[in-house]
Image (cartoon, rainbow, N blue to C red; front, top):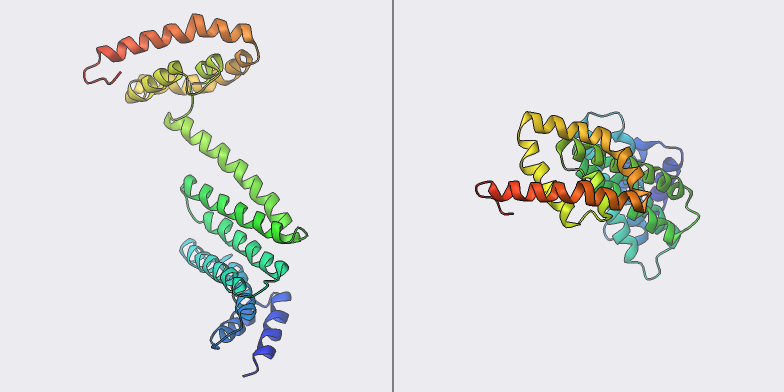
Length: 254
């Protein structure tokens, strides 16, 4: 078997996106033992890319399986290049870039926002590593910009989910105190979670509060006088009242 000829053919197919041929040839290359580290790294990298391409028009379960395999192939490619005495930064950068793409796309196969966010962060880290190794990696440059946009969208979605579930911040109290960990904020947040969100009327109030309070909090946050006034006239009295209410509740820890 002419392994060099197989690699040349696989790379030629890779550059023209003949993914069936890429998969067949790279799999054949990887069956050869022993295999030079750089050759294994290259074969696994283009195999990972072919798996990503194949996943695009599949059902959700197949997409996840193919993209998970792509992540594993890209990681093994990086490990193979690492066995070289002097790994070529450019080729290693390409493997990190493919890994980042696979991680980002794998995240999209999950409905849970925290899982999507985790894979997005991993994708960003991999792509940043690709650019550290080869700053002119154009795929990595484009991908990092795209992954950063996904990061922003995920953050907005997570914030919206928290607000809908009652896990968001107490906007006015936080603006007035200037610290989300201030005792007053903690007391009011606990009251929201332990009391208001436990009944229909309380949940309706929380939804109304989240709809109306952000612009008010923004105005308060910009003025030292308004922060002081809101703290003295609203936040501290409310926290004292809520604290005493909790103390009267059976089994309360406050």
